[in-house]
Length: 94
Image (cartoon, rainbow, N blue to C red; front, top):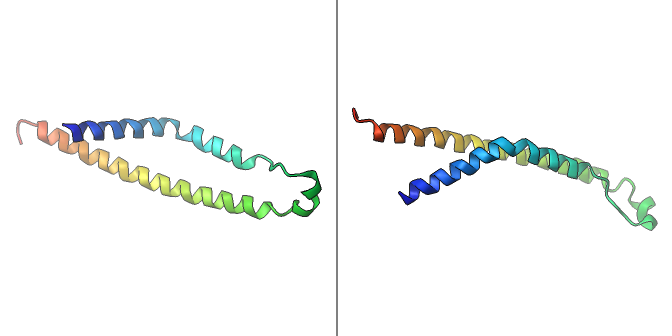
């Protein structure tokens, strides 16, 4: 019963994430789009220094997003299996 409650809690978190995921990714993209504040004395030296970092950060963010989506798919498959088990365990004909 405790294990079932823990799984239920995980599923509730998963459903919450599914409903609000786009907000997180919009926020994350806005953070990456923000200008980097640097000291005026260093501005000339660092003007182009951060552009490759931004590109790398965007690529890394996309890769992490794909990993996260893969994890969600795995959880979704587990949810379907759990629902099938639940239905079959409560089915009086089985």
